Length: 236
Image (cartoon, rainbow, N blue to C red; front, side, top):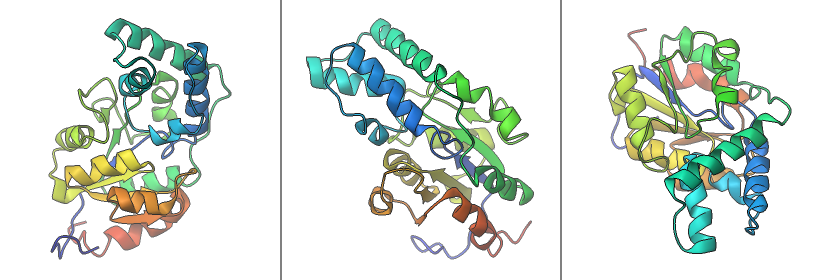
């Protein structure tokens, strides 16, 4: 747990990504992005959208537009294209919570950590399910979405806003994410950053992005919450 000379750690908040972390949804997102971009007649690779995970919808659209056309989409184009992507996503079968994620969140709540959602998504299909699937964990006012930031992941702004909502500093925060861009954002915010491999992105990519520790699944993270927090959180 020692990092940058840190000899004690009393986490008060956990800042948690949504897609690929709380929900097994990244396959559907990649499918929806691929279909929407292909409808425009733009060549793209299905799996590239896993690497954009964590970016806001506008950021993802502009990456594709700059590559295809040499310029960003207009705000109106980006809004309409993201709306189309959300429709395609909502037409797919419902996704399930990521195995182990509900237990992981409960372990954090049982240890009195404040849990804050930090996602680049604005996908209401999943946001509207949080209260049911994760009761009490992410109430309104404890959510940072793609609509709440001007700079999405890998910029630290989403996690810094999450700290503000929780009323904590970086040294008392844990960031949990499954994607390199999210890990980069967590690390840049100063939070102790946990990477979790829940999809095709390898462990080394998360370590290279700045993760302090990487687990092979959400179930493995849930199994180890006590080892991570109890020895250091002596006030609980």
